[in-house]
Length: 197
Image (tube, rainbow, N blue to C red; front, side):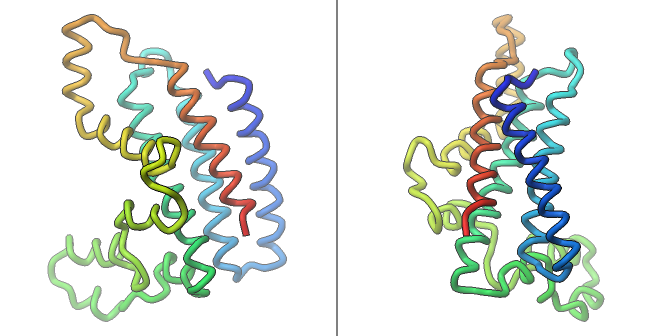
């Protein structure tokens, strides 16, 4: 399914991931490198997962759910890299090294405890994607990561509605060209973020 540009970019990122793993062997406590390596691995795996979907599962909503998550992760990674210029411990914070374990253990509400371990684990920032994206790009630019994330998020929030209307009208749900364009944008941005100091 992947077009030639996507395959080439994916291969470049796979090679980059191997290099990053080698760097980690020499510097295993480098939290920035740990986080970046994880992002590259997971996003590449997500794209490979989409590439391997059987034809019967090639529905736009499945692709968009995964791609939306990847775009969200790009925002987080870009934000972390930008923020690290001023806050050296931001990657440690992302990894939850500032979590108050006593508070979590004392929390009776399991949902609240899970939130404390997940989205509320950071003491340096909150996952407010518009504000995070503002740190590294013009969020109103039509070619911004945030704009594409917003489009995909809206599509995901309304995915069943779109699916129902496509069933009624008989439209083909899967637009391979659009999906490929999103994938190459995503992979290229990931590479740019990793290469940026």
